[in-house]
Image 1 (tube, rainbow, N blue to C red):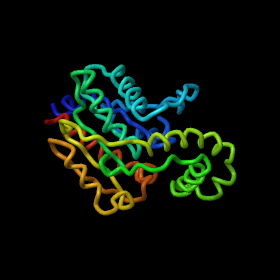
Image 2 (cartoon, rainbow, N blue to C red):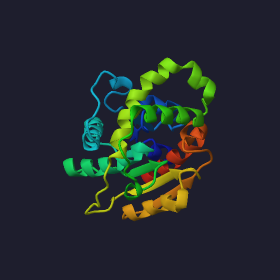
Image 3 (cartoon, one colour):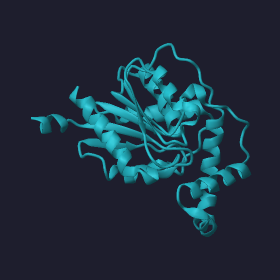
Image 4 (cartoon, rainbow, N blue to C red):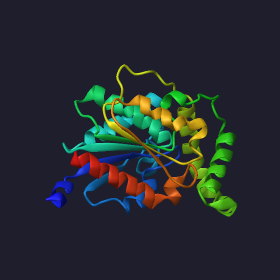
Length: 243
């Protein structure tokens, strides 16, 4: 009986970090339960949509991602996972979907990012600065300086997308919503993400339950704590379907 109940399918839409693509979620998919349909999303100009034009502003990105999700909804329950910049997008996409449809995700996962009202707008980043930041991120992700030095062509291919994403991300402006999120949310974060305990402020953005899950590793824990992250996703979604 329990097995049949949990076999009820659910869609999990996954939104990448800046410069990332749908491919970044492939390792996580390896550990996900078979009844969860993992659907990674690509931003325009990234991954499988590499030939498309980039977005011109953050709202255009939100609108496009919402459209991608809405067009893939199959009538079954769905959840959304945002990672780093993807968390900001997931937050705004929730409200965009609510505005355009009568559907609501049964759960939202916000990973590796502070709440939207703690996002700090910055000056537009130069291409050179974006390139340096990308190199630093690759080292942090475990590639090391050797990878950076020997894959210059790959770096040159990724940098334009990363620069565009960072520019859109840096210009994001939070606006208080009339209504709180009407879904349970889970916040997944590392010690590095939780400066001044800001991650705990996510709880004020939902009218329902907020679960906090701290994991080992740094900001890119999706690469090092992949199995643990998948366990969290599986456990939470099992709970949601059993309610």
